[in-house]
Length: 253
Length: 253
Image (cartoon, rainbow over all chains, first blue to last red; front, side, top):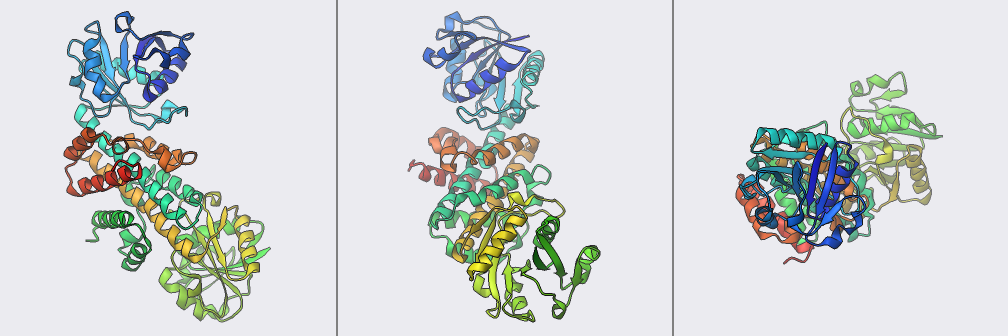
């Protein structure tokens, strides 16, 4: 049984808590939050605290707090030589105070407040300085049925940028499509099956092989007509840059 | 029973053929292709031809051919006053020869060769000049269980642009993420659950509400670090433009 203390009470911490609680191989022995009211709801399930000096002993401390708080919180921990992991995509493993056994347990997924997600769909990027800590983190990931990958800090920071492209930026393209359809009283719902199919397609096909459309074909007539149809200059600029990008990828310029 | 003649033998025509063949309310009475060898495989199931002068009578002729071929092929049809629809997102309904009863039956989806798709996930944009033709096209869509929407030519052309954003452009973002991860020996597979979740999220949340990340938070430190990490100038430029776009959408500039 892996004993866990959870620190932080935001979105990521809440999703971890639910997954850890359901695992039979893990015991959340305590949940810490600076604001106790945020964890009051679970006080019948586990111990809660807002004081670092009351932290219990555990096999691993999971710090799911803001990037900016990681270093300071880790240095305030009233113990040393215990395994403490942060859950950030961009913070280095050495940002954790060196009195600790340090590690990273970064879930590469977008979490929606109040919407449960199965951790089978949450790849965990694992990093640790000691081999036995790496083994423990793997076991921890497996205990919540999450796929896990050994990823060093540089790779993780790179993944974090890549995640911005496929998540925030892709979502902004959906937003732009929403603006474009709204302007012509077209229900955005028509596009949803296409959005889903586009994402599903790359499960079996590389994005390179999956590409279609006017930019890939270098279909100048359609591209010109599309640019004429776009009324918003920001949309036009993005259309041009992404079209160029596709053309370059597929050897069209 | 709706009698259909299918014209064209590309990807879209093939997907339509399979769906129509399976419907109990539709009979594909004939399949025309300029290149007969492309439809030889179904000669035991339906009549095939490569000669327009042998076209049989039908309730509707579905022209699933290249945009550029639509006008000419429609004018070559050796009959008038029958319902002929094209399946293009960008060609106007009036591009069809005016001797015909004209319509549009545009499937808004990305089709992959040799990969079957259920038409329940293929919204059909329907347009017709005559009311009774509209009714027939609705019935036809329902017979293959496709959701359908009455969409005029201007709206359809707008949808076609929006589709480029959510399909070709989103896929190019996946491609860029693939390039970014490959450069650091990171398996692209780690990103797949995030890609899927991002697409699924907007089924219940608007893209505006679903947005997260450094650009939305105007987290200058992370944005700066990401730009520094990106080694490819084209990736940098896209990162900047999409970050600006998100900031504008969420009132951050």
